[in-house]
Image (tube, rainbow, N blue to C red):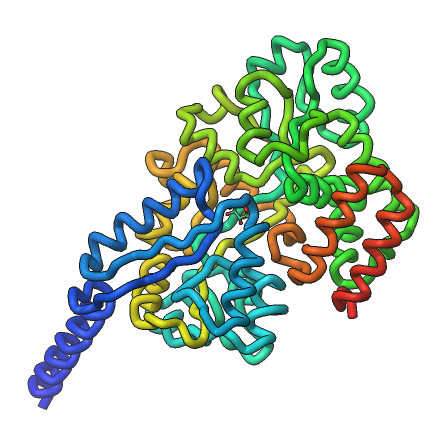
Length: 425
Ligand code: GAL
């Protein structure tokens, strides 16, 4: 009796393992797979390429169409995606941030396929942090995308040897940056802060808001408990304006990579950017703590402002089986260990090899330490806490502020935008 049961179980496990093998290494999947993202630039394209190379090895008969649209932070890609999604022409899979960017638009519009079966089959319910699962789920518990990473938004970069040469230290607070570091560098004809095009300004704004308002005040902007026109919120705009005064005047004309490169080249002292800049520096051949150094953006030490890049499966994807194979792959620890050391991010899958310093250099070890010990807040600019409608309007407000520095108008416009886009409602 027991022996029979054993034989049956063995047969069953053989069938199951063959079944699984056919999902993960099938040679019979063929045709196109269109992957939509905005990863075309330094550091970013390399991460995507690393994923595509391995996937192509696993699925040699699938023809990948890499439809990445240039423009950091998806500023151009999101517009193209919206036109395609609403026009009934979805790609097979697309990059989308965990949180409001996914939920308040695509999930709400019922354009995404739930992926719970995939999460359960792969054991991902136990392998992804609960907080992250919450950001990719609706209230009924349906999961709508597969995270590939955890990025940090509030990072300040510099070159240690250059700071020593200029006689400045890393400012811990906004006040120190504005009143001590900035004037000291200006006196030496060094640009204190490198900033790039419009979206990188909005990126800077969220770190300044966090540094001015603190965790509770910053979170309150997104849950409606912080008044957008309170004296504290006005102070965030004041600080932000003072930082713009410490920056390169050609900011609107340069990309995030250009701004990061200014720091590496010694043309500017600091840059506040997401840690995709670490990926870019690594691509440039720089060694962490030597070629580049980092700290939390001023006033934000102990806080990790997070965002997560994910891929989803839109309803009506022309090659849904191929897209599922891609999603099964990118969610795995193996894929994430190929992608993240190049991209500059932490793996989202907790069974990845993040604690291995051979794979993940000193930058990642430090980011991981912070990720696992800091207070976590979500990034506005990169979709975690505010809907895309807010984000688009906020880019305009920041653009106008860059030109006129009108604190009262910016704060009032942001307050109105928050109401219009349902924030805190
Ligand atoms: C973010 C994205 C990152 C990186 C960055 C710059 O929105 O999450 O992966 O691509 O934009 O383009």
